[in-house]
Amino acid sequence: AVLGYADVVHFTHLTDCLREDVMLYLNTISHIVHTCAVRWSGLANRNLGDGFLVLWKMPEAGVQGSEMVGMSLTMGTGDLATRRSAIADRALISFVKIIAECRRSPDINRFLTRAKQIRLAADQTPIDFRPEVGLGLHVGWAIEAPIGSDFKIDASYLSPHVNITMLLENATRMYGVPMLLSETFYALLSLRAKERVRKVDVVTIAAKPQGLFTFTMHNSVLEAPEGHNTGDIIKPEQLEDVPVEEIEGGSGAEFLWLIDQDIVVLQESIEENLLSFFRQGLCSYVDGDWSKAQELLQQALAIAPDDGPTKSLLTFMESFGFRPPQDWIGSRGEWQPF
Image 1 (cartoon, helix red, strand yellow):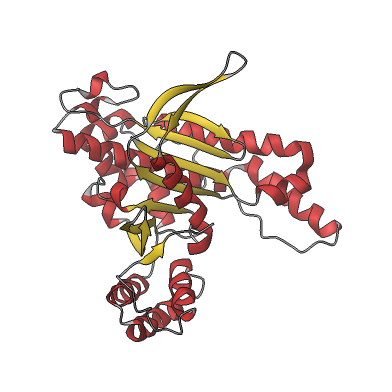
Image 2 (image 1 turned 120 degrees about the horizontal axis):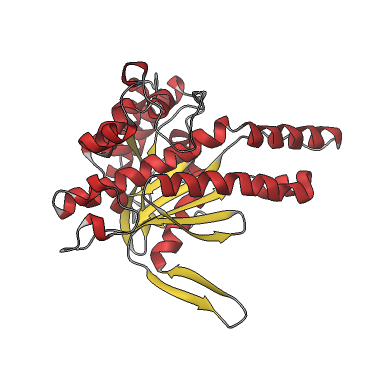
């Protein structure tokens, strides 16, 4: 299954400010997360306080898409690899939509404005509350089972892969990005989706080196058109009269990376020089040439001073004096971002 985890950013501080109203804030985000997941063929699974686990079941050999819960008709066509790629694309689109919907939600922004005002009135250190959630996407097996007793039972998924998904979400703070994807998830994406994704590091997870990826985006937000439903496609003007079903049914999720306006606006005007310098710097970093990596990443930072992945790599190398440790194998040691 594709496993996704969403966690509310600054939840402890928001609880301190909003008190009992924090539940209204949490339920507003919960509605967006679950609606976007289900809209894009996923399933809402567990609520873990300020975190939400969602998933997309993968088709098995010999099982048609129409037999799988939550699958659209287009996901039931093609070979197994194509169907799995379509699911991965839809999972990523779902998480991009969660970010866009949270950013433009008037209710969420009202709660955050109020929290800022409360901290200011109490003469507390200001916090830049933003309408964001931390997101992690991974793929792996999980045991589906009821957990509990006669007093309370929850349907749940148990697996070390669930823990890895939560680990990815937690590390978004370290890399200064709203979303992190594992290499196993990235490998399932279509070519169009991979073009939108950026590799940010190589780490060791469960004794295996694994790349980390993110969906590169600005802090911009698109105002939703009139009649927009949470999680839905936002079409360009030239396709306004084309039914959504026809757009999704034609080329599947791959076509949506080109036309959905949330995706377009979030990635609009991203500096190609930034991505180029970062890619080169990342390669030098992995190869152990940290002097060259430092030079290239500094050039990337000059283009985008607030770029989280660039600052994260520079900070990590600086902790070693920009000299790789003797046991460097192209990835960080056993990953513990907590």
